Amino acid sequence: MNGFTLADSHSIPWRKSTVALGIEVKDLGSSGGRSMQLVRFKPGTSFPLHAHTGLEFIYLKEGEPVQDGQRLLSGYAATAASGTVNANYHSTTGCVFLAVYCD
Image (cartoon, rainbow, N blue to C red; front, side, top):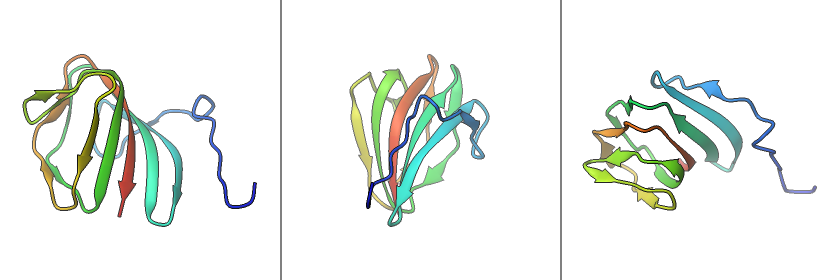
């Protein structure tokens, strides 16, 4: 399809994240400095302290992560502006979310 890229997320294998143990990702596509991933945290996983170098959007599909003391539930959406810092993003239950990164 001209100008479109399609990905069947069910057929894409999970791969280990290069950022932290207990995190797996599926790379769904990228274009024009933007990329999209499914991200899965195993129960008890914490994401290391990090600054956002560009905009980040997430949509929580399942599970319950905690971001800076706020518990997120299935259906929550979050936006992180460029330059913001995540100091304590973790999940005791595990979770899966869709992430879109804009550099």
